[in-house]
Length: 404
Image: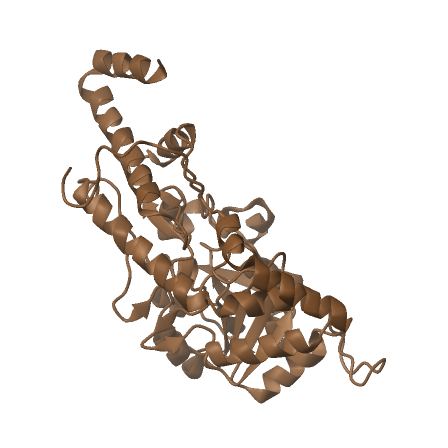
């Protein structure tokens, strides 16, 4: 044993995410909250939704919050409130979930893909400024994997070139830059309550935060078909309401969010320690966290060089160690966006990241022993790779022993 990493850990399966553990710890409170909604009969836009809007606004250090049906709708509604439409351009990262781009395209606007920072995977301000034109009406910095993008520089660009800033904070509730929370920097911030998020419901759900009363009033209209008062429609909106049952569950979980975030931060620090103790910090690239950020670790993502990422993932799968690739393609490489004319090499950092990233288990309830199993499994893989290169015959013998 070297340092704090246990080379003798007996391997066991480790799930990428185990939502049952979290649920077991608070299930009585969730039952009570659901019963309260059912007894009230207020299933849509009821008191639980209003309470959640107020709580998320306060938690995110904003004046306002408007609940909606999903994180994808939160992005779409934000763009609608900013009057984005045909002929407009919206600059977004290519290295992100599909919803960031689909929201732009659905409104007839053109997504302009920019590259990312090689260390944080967040939108690169230098590349964004290169791509600003007279048609640029908004940018969407994504706070990827739980670490905030460089909002200082994006807000400077927004003032200089006069466009809206919409934060995609789907993976980063509670994340901070210089002590200021995600969702409080831009004109609007879009959040997701999908079950895999740090604050997840039991299905889809979303929220939009804002410090701007005018945007908030538009959002309140747009997410209920533009209707105010009932059956009188001032604008054409969409139906995107958060139901009260989801809000009740999220209200319960919000009380525990900071404790769960602290556990994720501790797990990330422990991974770093184990990788270094195991001598793997020069074999894989560990996640980078800016000192001015509070990283909330929705994902713990390593980079695996030398075209070994997929082989490593297969090896982990065989040992029943969960992992995932976020994301295997940049959006500029997706078939549905070929009409935009990008080539793979148009965004070199995005292309490189998509071929190297691998997310490991990081959920709050992950145990220290499970982290030993993850790191030991990765260590065993690279030891096997070294033996294959140096001693092919010994590698075959080792594989036979493991199979036996």
